Length: 85
Ligand SMILES: [Zn+2]
Ligand SMILES: [Zn+2]
Picture 1: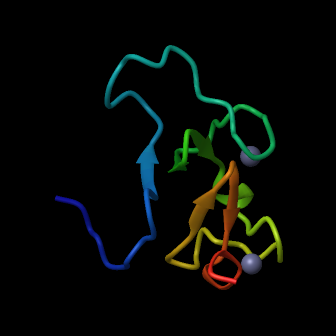
Picture 2: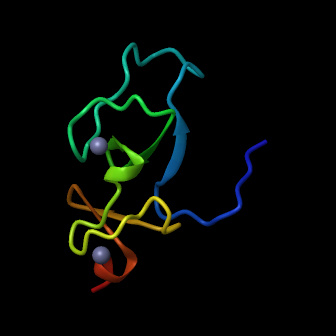
Picture 3: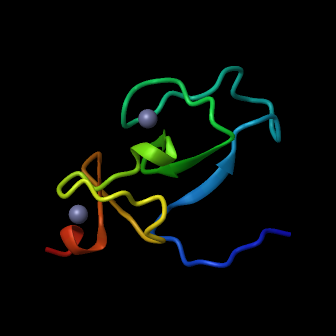
């Protein structure tokens, strides 16, 4: 049972990074900063995984891990306003 209180945008899901399944032998690298993700939770967005703190709008730099919605286009993450601009 997942405690799903908020609405999250297209394709975004917090994921537990430790061994709930065993195909990734090592932690993934963050698509934002390129460093390995050793955090317990990270985000799936587009083709990659992201640190919570790397989930920022490409345009205005707003943090999106708490925004409850974010949007992905052409390899970059946008807040709602900038995505629909
Ligand atoms: Zn990162
Ligand atoms: Zn923005």
